[in-house]
Length: 166
Image (cartoon, rainbow, N blue to C red):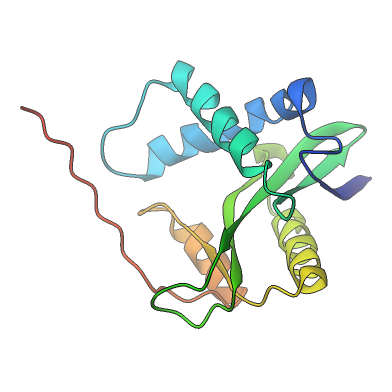
């Protein structure tokens, strides 16, 4: 049985509890390396950077994570950050959300868990009165892009990267 719960930085998702998400993040990192183009940072540095980002994100009282647990162990999560102030291009309202990360363990995929996580995200955003949300998808991650499109997301930005090698 899978339980999906919403947690915030000021409640349960700090310290060691946050580190429980590391294996899931690293599985997503590995997936991104398989499907995406371009240079990436070394795998052994990735969680430290992501953990610092999550710690910063969860400093906002409206930010939250949705964690799916099976037998007490995390099998998926969504991390949601907030942007305060209206966007300069899109009709977002005064606050809009960004699903910073959505990941489901390889063993738990294709069982509706990604949908359950995003359903919980949507319910929390509705409770907060937030009507606009963004989610990024790695170039080459076609399955994720199709999933997000089925959920009502539409492409609005293409982000390009260049690293000066001189």
